[in-house]
Image (cartoon, rainbow, N blue to C red; front, side):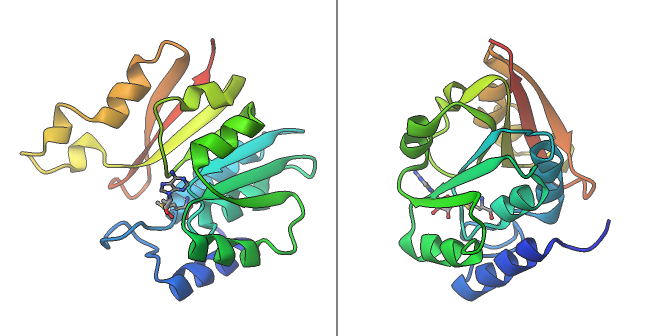
Length: 193
Ligand SMILES: C[S@@+](CC[C@H](N)C(=O)[O-])C[C@H]1O[C@@H](n2cnc3c(N)ncnc32)[C@H](O)[C@@H]1O
């Protein structure tokens, strides 16, 4: 599916340096998977004159996918609680004046800068994230396992709080997108009210 954007390679190297996994198989928080990144890039590319927010920067892998694809007149702000990751992400984006990496609580900091055209929710409180979007703006959650890939006895087959949240909020038109690896999926919604 083509080469990785340079910024993504830079962020992946930073992830390895700080010990953040590039897969979902480890124990600690992991960086954005390539399948997720490509999907985010598709949405970011449509944010003409827009603003993108990310909750939970890690060291910036997802932000790198979005920043590499977003139009020249779009800006991205990403927020991370962990100071070591913030410093690493600030180095990754040191030559990207359209990208701002903020140290703090992701919801609180994005709420100060709302509304956004696209928000990637990947760390921090998620109960009020729809309020961060303008009408027509998009929300993406990752770290979801397709029901077909869950163990037969997994409680998430019947009751998954993320899906519950996404599919019961009447302000969102939402769907689940299963990634080509068939082991990971995303929840994606557009704010309509
Ligand atoms: C799954 S990782 C993020 C990966 C990143 N989005 C990427 O694309 O590589 C989740 C991150 O959210 C951060 N986090 C957790 N709670 C947070 C909060 N309240 N505010 C900001 N960041 C938070 C964690 O420190 C962690 O680095």
